[in-house]
Length: 105
Image (cartoon, rainbow, N blue to C red; front, side):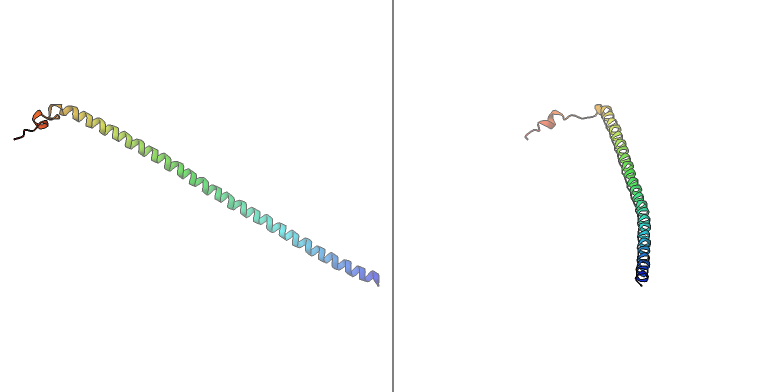
């Protein structure tokens, strides 16, 4: 009789241990799946960040190019303005004495 009780207890204990082992295995599999999913999400985030950084670099480059073009145009305009002033030297560019000292009539 003791042998039968011990045998039943050991059978139930083995069944509980098998269920626990199966549950642990399922948890490990779920954790592995969750880790793979998180790794995929992390890669997506890293790629998105890299795209934003590349976009910032391109924006900076385009801004620098636009500034250079504006500076070049300003220099060309200044050169044209000084060239046109030298052509107008024959014109009245300085005040005449009567303009500086108006008569007090």
